[in-house]
Every structure is written in structure tokens, then in C-alpha cells.
Image (cartoon, rainbow, N blue to C red; front, side, top):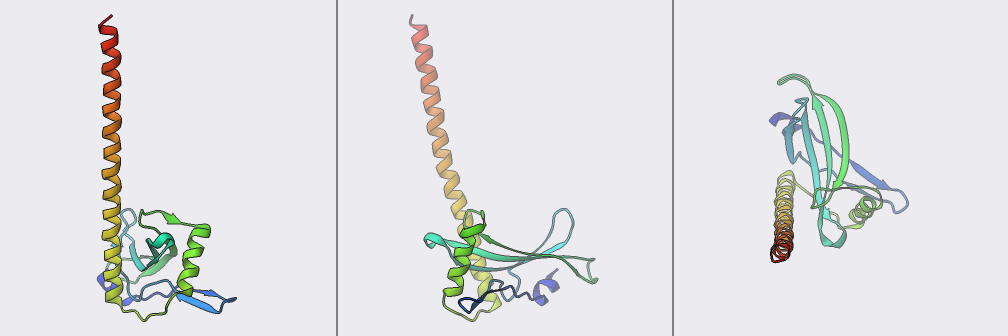
Amino acid sequence: MELAEDRIRVSWILIDPTKKRAVNVASLKAVEARRHWLTEDIQLRYATVMAGDGGELVQCGVVMTCGGKEGGELQVREVSMQVEDMEGRILTGIDSLVILDEAMEGQRRKSDGESEKAIYERFLSMKVECRERKQRRERGVDMVCIAAGVSIFLAIWMIFFWR
């Protein structure tokens, strides 16, 4: 698996012929390699982190699924692209098109595999922080609802008890 992560390269180039612009949405090297839990296929993720709507970060990722035995020949089974926001939602339609259009209009930069991997790992840590913040907020709302329910129950019980 490490050999596949280091040696397999992917380019997923989107071209806008009207504006004569293009962007490669795949990273130079795989930023993540793992085995699929059910099929034991190797999944390699090539991701680029970019700014989305409202300044939040989004990940444009190309996932390549390869099958084969350990030490044997790999066969590419599937290659897919998706745009994912900080909350883990897959963006589709106009949302993803706007982000990809902004990426095409953005500044060009040369990238290396190590910095892309570090940026991707930072994106993942920010995603975890966002999820934890959301869970804390939901726990607070749950506690308020429970307290309100208990208060209403006690009030109704007191009214019937004192009659």
C-alpha cells in the first residue's frame, strides 16, 4: 500500500474552454491511502484544499480505488472526484461549480507533495474541530430541552397534587 501511495500519480484537469483556463484538482502525491473495509481494495485520495463560499475551506478530492493482491499487480477499478466542505457534506450542482470556477480564476502555484499533505491534514483537524464545536452546541440545546421538559412535568404534577 505504501508503494502505491508513493508511486501512483493522478492528474484530474478541469478545462474551461470559454475562459481558456484550467485547474488540476488532484494533488501531486496521494495525501491518504487506506484499505476499503469491505472489499479490501486500496483507496488513494489526491486532494487539494481551497477556499469555498464565505471563506470556509473545501476539499476537492480525487479518489482512486485499486484492486489486487499484496505484492501483486494493481488494477484501477474506479476514479471519482468530489468537492467536500468542512462539515463533510459533498457539494453538488451550482455550489461545486462556483468553487471550481473560483479555483480556475485563482492564483497559480507550484505544489509539492509534502506541503499538500500537510495542508490536507490541517484541513482534517479543522474539520474535526468544527464537528466537536457543533456537538457541544447540540449538547447545550439538548440540556435546555431536558430542563424545560422536567420543569413542565413538575409544574403539571404540582398542580394536580395540590388540588
